[in-house]
Amino acid sequence: MKRMLRVSHHELLFHNFFGVLTKPSAISSPLGAAAQSYCASSSSSQYVWPNIVGLFAGKWSYGDSLIMNDLRDKVSELRDELVMHSGDVEILHKLLEEKGNPLFRKYHDGAAVIELMRQLGSSPQLAIEVFNWRREIDYAIPIVAEEYSKGIRMAGRLQNVELAAQIFREASNKQVKTTSIYNALMGAYMYNGLAVKCQSIFEEMKKEGSCSPTIVTYNILISVFGRLLLVDQMEETYREAAWRRWRKLMS
Image 1 (spheres, helix red, strand yellow):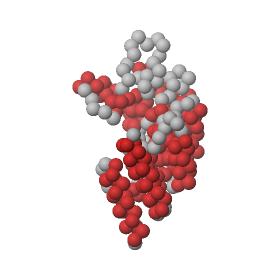
Image 2 (cartoon, helix red, strand yellow; image 1 turned 180 degrees about the vertical axis):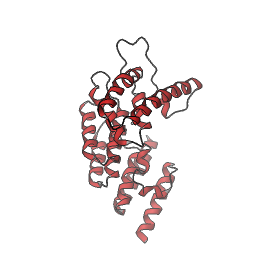
Image 3 (cartoon, helix red, strand yellow; image 1 turned 60 degrees about the vertical axis):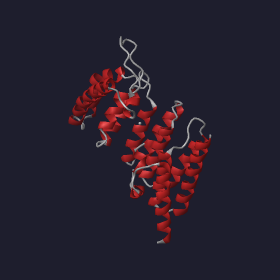
Image 4 (cartoon, one colour; image 1 turned 90 degrees about the vertical axis):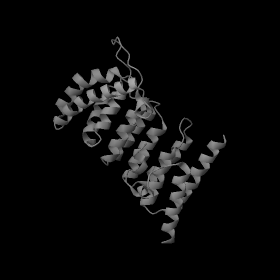
């Protein structure tokens, strides 16, 4: 009982310290905070659309909102057709080639693919089908980091950690390394209860010069340790997160 009280106490301190608004009970959630947390235009195109991935997370102007609404509407139409034919891979690929490809090429930052995978969140198997097709045309439209992150997360939800790791390696081999991609793989391991692998990727991230842990990273670690009742590891993670935060504030 005392150990569990220690967990609750430290968790509360952690969330207060970093300003996280999730409830302490969220620590045992399979995805938890990990879910808070993923294209070059055609050479023949006469119009280059603006980079709009940032609009997903920031404050929008009225014009930005119109662009986003237009994107969502177009993606929703494609999503509905894909869902309707989800059992036929041949038709799916035909739809993606004829209707998806022209749409994806308009958004050189991958925004259309990212939005489609977001809308397919309740159908992870279909989302993976879309992402695997997306990987096949990478030579024409390079995959961006957030697309890789989405693919890894979907693979994790399907309990296909081998595919999640494969996508991660593919991104790494193409020098597409970001904190969000590391977080996605850690989240996939967490979702499937693989604490050792999750921690291993965390240690690898810390050695990567271009990436550094975020609040999402530490919440993933805390969640996986919490599910396994590894109190000492949880407390160590709290201390490291607090120390990194303090060092960042002092720099």
